[in-house]
Length: 244
Ligand SMILES: NC(=O)c1ccc[n+]([C@@H]2O[C@H](COP(=O)([O-])OP(=O)(O)OC[C@H]3O[C@@H](n4cnc5c(N)ncnc54)[C@H](OP(=O)(O)O)[C@@H]3O)[C@@H](O)[C@H]2O)c1
Image 1 (cartoon, rainbow, N blue to C red):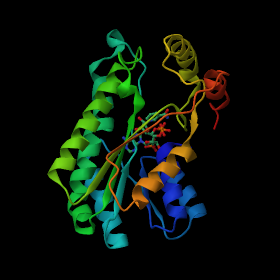
Image 2: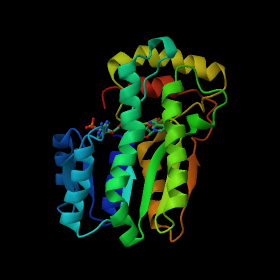
Image 3: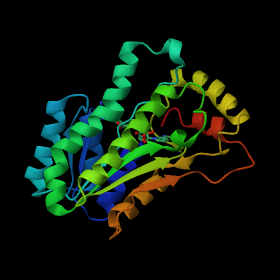
């Protein structure tokens, strides 16, 4: 399960009415059936401005307002510079950065009205110096996202903006073709001291999202890392997870 989906489920379990949004709406419909009729599934591609506006409009129309936005979409390409073509850059920046601005633009008046909260998923990879090998485009996108959110904190004092920079987390993203690439990269990152020996569960991060939304205060930036483990289980966990 992806971290956004785990978060949406956790928020819905608190009784909140949640619009789950992603491109594969059929997957979300199945989840919403389990979660309950107080929630709904909406199709959205954050690379499309009209789709970003529509998902906010539909949510507001159904729920009568908007108390919170959680922006999870993010893609990671593990490419050094010579392997990043224009299309790969465009896709990374459109999904990880521009989509966040388009959804927030559509939601901002509603969030101001409710004095609501907006949470954006970043990565502890932005704190690594130098960034992990092959992660430059991703890190650039998350640094840009964190900078945007800091700017929005200054622009809109009546909305609680948060970035959550998280460490390696088991999610729904591992496909067979990534495994070989990841095995090499994880070994390389481990030898340079970037890894923690284990990964967090998506549900563990989701609990932190709920806590941020529930807080009467604004958490501006939260950084969550796995506890260190002597026993290195990252590659094993990644492989075990490929079919989830
Ligand atoms: N997992 C980690 O170790 C980790 C660590 C640090 C930060 N993060 C960040 O946490 C966030 C979630 O990561 P994850 O590992 O849960 O990723 P994931 O499992 O790949 O899930 C990403 C979700 O985003 C949706 N999505 C992708 N492109 C989209 C688009 N153009 N429009 C709308 N929805 C789109 C996908 O659904 P559809 O395909 O159906 O659209 C998917 O449900 C990302 O921003 C990631 O950078 C993850």
